[in-house]
Image 1 (tube, rainbow, N blue to C red):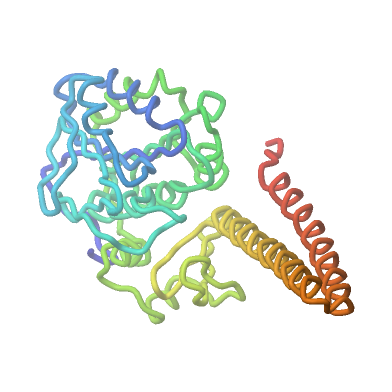
Image 2: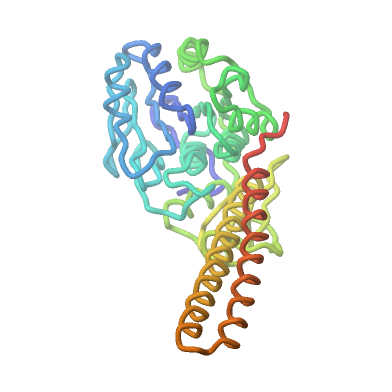
Length: 342
């Protein structure tokens, strides 16, 4: 991944990159059905998926453009759709695809931001980034990188998105060029790829450094020192120290192992960690109560009445503690599921 350079001339071809999460399958099917045959740019898609994905087959059936799972090292071609495979970041270096099992970003792999940054580094002003429906804030940092490198930024209208968090966060943190409903997106993309690209500009070094981290080329304390300042927080993935990165209006964190999260993703991860800790504490107290009753029953059967009485008291104490912790867990889950008004 190159650092601090203008983008290379790869025959002037624009590249469209699209990120989606919850609600993305239907949105991408609708978009694929509306893109015209012979679309003069490659389309690269990251959708947050599990261990298995049939998106290439789904998108190929939905519209005229062939969709595929790319091989690492293959060249991207206009008129084709490339879908990131499960468990791998899909990146671009010049006009070739890289698939890497790099550190997770926003708790996801594949993640949207690494693809967007890598395309910003290689295509600069010829990059067109699109954020669709999804939860949390993956895509905001990558869209900001495309904007900084002179590319075009597009967000699905949050009121049109099944899950509006990702589009809304992108609008909050990036000076977006276009905010449109899904029904207008294909026509907008067709118009943009036919227009002359904007003037190329210098690619910021830190954007390409983060693209290199995703490609497993450069991740250590020295590199994270270049990106931000050491914070008091620890990484929810590896428990290592986190560096705080201020990226325009966006606040992000990255550890020396390469894991990266927006502030919103950090809150989500911390909520999950808190829930797991409360559940473990609840199980321990339930087991202590059960063990105390088991001992009490055994003592009573063997005539040790005083010991049995004492153990039954301890069992009631542990059950009381478990009841309090159980209510804490219920309250925590209710708070985490609460959807605040925008």
